[in-house]
Image (cartoon, rainbow, N blue to C red; front, side, top):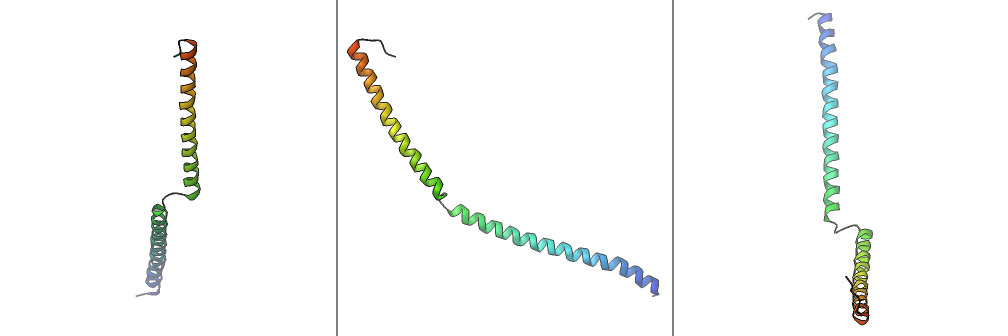
Length: 90
């Protein structure tokens, strides 16, 4: 082989090896990122709910229970007023 042929082969082979090495490095990095994300998602999925969210939901449920009992009281009072006055209440 001549010196020119060796240079031509080197010009083709060296960038190809660098490109393949870069591609493999990106693939490996991406695979490790995917594994880390899958682990984070599995940990997050195993939690029942966010602690603040759970306490806020319980607070909202308690407020709804109070509002329902107040509404029942208001309906009873309106019915009593209507019955006592003889008014047509709808």
